[in-house]
Length: 459
Image (tube, rainbow, N blue to C red; front, side, top):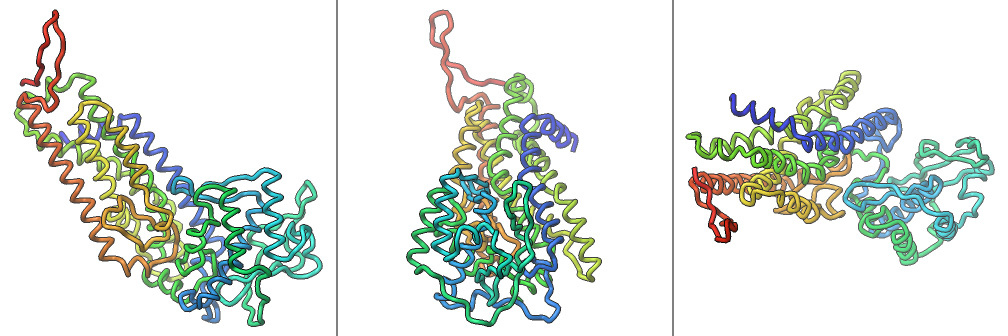
């Protein structure tokens, strides 16, 4: 225990450790807290996961839609999203697996405006929200209803421009036949491809992202269906949905930075010439390596487990007010099952490479691992797991059913990743013991007084 606590202290004194903590906070904690607060504020909105229909009637499940209906929903949803992005001049895209926002130039905005005019049949004045007094603007969405902007909604900005906020749109059931889109689906796809090229890689208007949002993957901000409502309250017990979302938010952080923490920790001994003290000791090399590895992993997981505390308190308070039994251990369970195996693997790789090479090459390898190990955009919705996926993605508060349908592969994946981590730890022990016995893995040759000398490690 004394050795373990000593290694924990050494880890906590590392600069890269605190860099990891800082990045973890901004990448995971802040988005989680903001999402919880936003969903709670909009709990009466049918698109919020907290929404409970007073009459028990929810939106239609997209899983029962025909191909034509899915196409119509995709067109209407994408057009409504493009309109909102145009009005804010803020277009979301995923260049590195995380969402970012891009602002277009005036020329780019004019191009988007021309596309909106073609897609909606509306003029520039109506698109900019200045003609709302003359009637209602309407966009078809999934679920059998529509988002309606009623007269009197919106506000005038100081510069004289009429501004429509997302909350100004109201969802309403509409059984009347809504007119078909003014452009065919092929032309819609062509326009979305041009918009995607303007915004950048992985934009929300790419073909892959449109399928994620509007083909039954629960990524779209559409009204809750009865199935989604039951999954959120009865299966996820509220907190489970946010725990998955939190793990997704930090997935790319834990794919790289923990390895740097391990490399820095191992190189400190070399830079301080600690091998001369450590190698001759009678303590088993396996014990030294395993204790250091366990301590470093533990220190990395501590902030991962602590940071969601504020959001958990807010969710538990909501559950107590509404008489719902929350799963108070949801964040712990998802962090240990989804995040811990990834942390173990990247840190075990960093441990092995640093012992093997005794230099900072592990940092370069970590960068390559991060680039190669990032899942494709098609996996951010969750439920699509591969045997060797290094991280698990689930960028939505919905989709519990998709996860459970593929639970065997998910469990096998986490077991394989954990096994690979233990394998690298075993290899690190072998290399470490070899060095203690005075056998050089990489024989170093130096020139001394004109003679080439072979150097090995000797106790």
